[in-house]
Structures are given as structure tokens and as C-alpha cells.
Length: 427
Image (cartoon, rainbow, N blue to C red; front, side):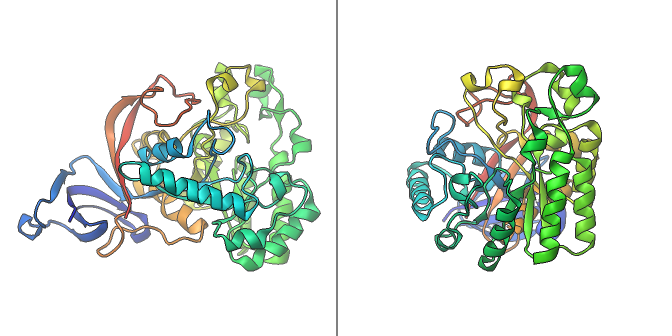
């Protein structure tokens, strides 16, 4: 029997709307008791006691979408290193986009990923997050021909997403119609590549000053408006990925007020940074969608606060040093984040009083689970002990030695962060 008592710890359980100081007893992978105080006489023999003063015990974090290097680009990230990075960042559920090489657009690919992941997990010591995958919406995620959605649904993909924008409106409408009966989430990124052109930064004064090609906000909002018209006509539930503009937040808020069945997510770096941070020309700030103007970032922050934006996604995108050590406009878009997101978001929004702690935790835990159609974790007797233990005060330096990811493409490389996950446990 394995038992742990978290004594007088701050418990964050957004599914139960709980933020309190309590004792939590976990026994053999399940929550055995939650109380103001649990007498030591009630503990099983050899219970490990974790003093909780200053610590946070929350439900496990859930990442809606991230990228794996394996298969195809193992020099960027393997499944083993990806899972290690996820658990080190407090994520107990991790969902992969299908844009691997080869892509997850067939049952054989999904089965390979599942078996390979399980074999690695069995060899690892300690915990490993539950790994899921999105099935591709289109063949080879190229947006030209619909993938075999029925076959993918049959092998248990969590839902359907390409991770890249579908440019053909007729194909998109057909995909929505055909995918609806499977009852799985459909996640879409709204971006008109023709309007974006060679833009690498959000269009505006900062783009002109920096001498970088701008991508106008309408490149996101025009296809989003079209998608919302499809949803209104067909009644198909969808998830809007990578929301990055203030106008998109307005459109989504209006659509929700009209009762359209949509959820939405923003990536974590778009909440922390904007075009003003790009003046360093750090290629690790080259993202897609690009970082927004300050007004975009403030709208996204408010969208999380008021629930217009349901979830925060990590969109972990590993690249090697050689791939990212190029001029800003030539760098592949994306940055890692599984191990960095929680401490940086906590210090920026919770420690400053901008958000309540439960606002951040629900956006990283219970709401992403619901967007996936999954049951959120909860800290209650009899429930699986899917827990993240977080110390908001501990300091650590971001380096290739301290990161579990094989890649270190992050603008915070070499910096000291405050806040670190001490442990994440699975049932």
C-alpha cells in the first residue's frame, strides 16, 4: 500500500469550485480523504507526510494540443522526452496533433503511436501522463482531401484536428457534416494563408518599426466568421484553436451569446507577450499565429477571465538549435512550453492578483478536459489521484540541463523562473 498525506496544503479543484487549505490523503492512486485536518491515528501505516505550507495541490493539468517530434523528427523530441517534459510541467493528460511524419491520418499510424507510447511508458520509472492523439481531418493534414474519419474514430482518437488551417471552404463544410455523427470534438485553426502572405508578426505600428512583414488580424477573423456561419447552419460543435486577436474574442463572445456550440482556446505565450517583445528579434518569438498587438493580448486576458476563451493550450513545438538559429522571419514558428507555462502564468496573473488562482487552474485543467469531452479530474474521496503539486516560490534556471524536453527553443532560456512543479501523480 502506498499512501501520502498532503498536510495543510492549498487545494485547487476548479471542477468543485474549491480553493481552500486542507489535508488530502491519497492511498493507492485514489483520494481517500479531504478534510480540514486528518488525525495521524487515521493514517495507514508508513504514510509519507508532505508538509503543504506555501504549496499548491491542484488537479492534473490538461494540454489540448502539442507537437511530437517522433515519429519523423526524433532529434527535436521523442515520445519519452515529451512525456517527461509534460509530467515535469504538471500535465497529466497530453493530446498530440497529428502532424507527425508520417501523420496520424490512418488507423495504422494511431495504433503505432499508442503501442510505441505504451512501451516507452512501461520502461520509464515514475509517473507518465495519459497520452492521446487528434486524428487528422484531412489526408496527410494537407487540407486537400478528407481523411478516413470513421476509421480514425474507431481506433479511439480523442477528436479530429489537422493543426493547420483548411483553406477550402467546401471541404471544410463537408468535413463538419461528415464528422458530426462521431460525437468527437473537431478543432480548427482559423487562418487565411492568402491574406497572411509572408507575414511573421501582427500587422501594425510595431511591425512597421521592426521592419517585419505584418499579418493582418483579418487573416484570422475572416475565416472565423465563415466558420461560425457554418456552425450556425449545421449545428456542429467545434473548438476554435489558437485565438489571437481582439476581434476574434468579440466574435466568439457574440457566438456564445447566441448559443452556438463552440469552445475556444488561446496559446499560453499569446497571454504573456505581444509584438512589443519582438524587438529583440529572438527567433523563439516567431510564432504562428504571430504575437498580437497589446490590445489583442489584453482582450485575450479578459477572454480567459470572463470565460469567453475556455482554455489555455501549450502548443509545445520543439525545434533543434540549428533550426531556430536563423533570422527571425526565416525561423520555423513555435516554441516549447510544457515545463514553463504554469510558473510563468502563475507569476504573471495569479501572483499579481489579475486572476484568481481558480481562473488559471480551470483554464489549464477542468476546461481543457471538457473541451475534449472528458471528465475533469477532481480532488474528492474515491476519485483517482490525478494531482499536480506546485511550489509558487521556488526559483530555478531554465537551461538545457534543467529541461526534460530535448529542445530548448524558448525565449526564457537562461532566465530564472519563480515557481516549479514538484510532482504530478497519476492514478
